[in-house]
Every structure is written in C-alpha cells, then in structure tokens.
Image 1 (cartoon, rainbow, N blue to C red):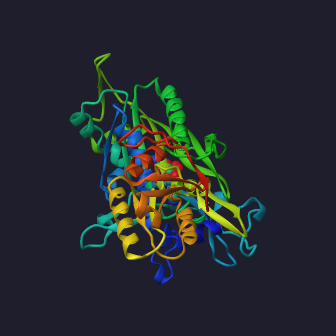
Image 2 (cartoon, rainbow, N blue to C red):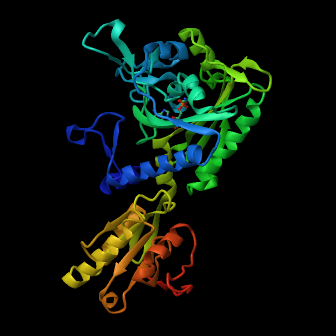
Image 3 (cartoon, helix red, strand yellow):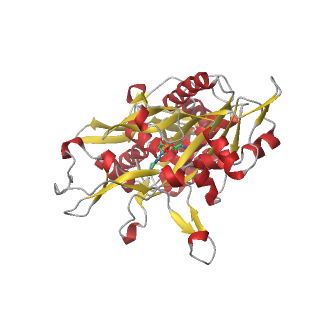
Length: 451
Ligand code: GAP
C-alpha cells in the first residue's frame, strides 16, 4: 500500500487534500491522471447500469436535503458507530473495529477505554444566516435517499413499470471514527448506487440476479476473479434498513474488505417516507389493479474503493535488465491515457511530423504527447500511468510514413503505416490483435520485442 500511495502521488493520480497545509484527515484529491481513471470507472458503471439497459433510469439529486429525510430514513437515530476513548492517551476508536490483538485495550498505549457511546456519522451544517437547531441540515451520508424521495417523480415522468431501477452517482460524507488505508475509508467519497424496485415476493430472485451482475461488472473491468469474493452479513451486522445483505469484497493489501454492499431493503424506505411526508409512494400494479409498495434491491458501490481495487489489482513490478519495471495493467476501457505519442527526437522536422500524428489520434483516444527525456524513460513513465500503447515516431518515419506501436504488457513493437494507426489502435484497445489497413484488407502480424 505504501508503494501505491507514493506512486499515486508521484504520477498525479491522488494527492492528500489541502496538501500545502499539511492535508486534511481522510480527504483526498484526484490529480490529472487520477481524475481520468475515476471518470472512466463512473462512466463504465453508468453505461452498464443505465445506458445499456431498458429497465433503468438515472438521477442526480442534491447533496443537501430536507432534514426530515434523515429522520424518516432512520439516519438521525441509527446511523452511528460505538465510540470509545482511551483514558490514558485520549485517542478515539470504533469499539467494534478494534484489532483483536489489542484485547479490548488501547492499541496505541494499552490504556483502558471509556464506556462505548453512540456517535452519529452524519456531518451537520446550517442553512441560511442563523446557526440554530432549526437551520441544521446534513451532508448526505448516502445517495440512496435522493432516489427514494424522487420515486413518485420518476414513476410519473418516466412511466417505468416494475421491475425497474434508478441509479445515481455522487458524493457522500461520513464523519468516520476510524479512517485510513488510503482512499479505502475517507470522510468525503463517491458512491454509485442503484435502487431496483421489484414486486414483493420476487425480491430473493432479484437479489441473486444483482449479486451475479455486479460481480461480473468488476471482472469486466479486468479485476482478477480470485481477488473478489462474496460475504453474507450476519444478523447483527445488518444495517437498520436491511433484510439481508451480501458484500462483494476485494483482497486489498490490508486484507479482504468491502467493495460494494448488495442489500434487500424491502419496503423500509418507501414506507418511512410515506409516513413522514404524508405523500403516496405506492405503485399501481397493472396485474392486480392494486396499490403496492415495491421492495428494493440495492447494489451500492464506492467509486473510490473501486479505484483502489483497480490500482491494487493492476499494479505490477517486473525485473527488467538491472532495474524493476513498475506498471499498471489497466483494462483499456479504464486506462486514464490510452495512447502516448513519443517522437524520438525534438528536431523540428520530426517534431512537426509527430505533432501531426498526435493531432490525428487525439480526437479518437485520450492521448498524451511526450518529448522529454530518453525514450526508455518515457516508456517507463507511460508504464507507470498504465498507458496501453505508445506510438514512437523516428527519422525513418519521415521516409516511409510508418510509426512504431509499443505494447505496455508485452513490450512488443509493430511497425504500422501512419494512416492505419488510429484503426489499428482502435482494434487493439478493443482486444483485437489484428488490424486492417484502411485501403486494403491487409492483416499485419510482424512484431519485435522491444524495451
Ligand atoms: N446506501 C447503502 C450504503 O450506503 P454502505 O455499505 O454504507 O451502504 C456503500 O456503503 C458503499 O459505499 C461501500 O461498499 C463502500 O464502497 C462505499 N463507502 C462507504 N463508506 C465509505 C467511506 N467512508 N469511504 C469510502 N467509501 C465508502
């Protein structure tokens, strides 16, 4: 994890928040490369969860909501963790998250703890110019409630019939007692949540469906299946709204830990909001002509935890001559940079040629242009960014109008006519290892081992 954190900072993936002021505990900033990776993750999720499906619609709701929402949802009374304080060093810990070897004493100084007190995890702020109890609002601790309170709005405007789902991606905030492990548990993070509404009685079937679907999604991002597992919650672990829940866990460097929770929330939330708001949130069942309250299956994933799992899974070190080659084997769909154009020299005639190549590729892929330092150093830099392909332009290119494509994982190189570069890279990024020349149907095969 330490190596990953330092590489992420060095290469512009993730920085501590407010770094020049010494950071802010458990808050992180995504740098120029990290923001692309994160966007690619969210876009892949949105495509799979909303755009590629007929039974889903999206939503983007406000972070600040009427405080009654959180009374109805149970967060004001039940969204808390047991907090203990060491009587010796006054450090605070989550009583249910202490390392077993501490044997109920302070892991820092061995001191005795105070009695556990329930600590609510919601951040509070004030709306308007007066700071009193009547103006308290909360930063949302989950995006889900924005979906439930809009159930009728979406139903009336989208005319979806059961079963159907509503998806949302957005920031959530939790005043976590124990944070750490880089972006695994932070106080400001992003969630990708689906509330999938079904007929009561079909909920077990849909629960199983979503578990399979979501596991498949992570595997599709290139995460190795042996690093993923499913863990069912025990009765005493269940959240206040949940009938049953399974976590998709990833084998992080610190051990197996939750990546996503898939819960059966039954009719808890819609019922609560009907009671607290006095508004009808039922569904007129076309089969029975009766009003019913749908049950809800909720696959709730963390953007930052997915990014962390991808970083951990893709990180690799390989012996390379006398050195170690560090690289990320990102799946092409989520790689922050897809192609880097590297001219062998900065000489004017070659630079102009390389710039033209860059200009022709940039509209097709996230492409970088890099002409600093030796070609070897530039390859290593792109490896550390996880760039699947580098395109090298040399003096021979000026003669034959060809360029070299160098593959990140194998370091193999092939020489390709410049007019065929975009089509070839497109095929390669899509997993096809052949390409067809635009003018002719020629299949290129020749490869050489490079550095
Ligand atoms: N609406 C249900 C819900 O919020 P959760 O299990 O509390 O369920 C869902 O959160 C996901 O959100 C987690 O699986 C995790 O990926 C992410 N998450 C929760 N708390 C987090 C935190 N403090 N830092 C980063 N990600 C977090």
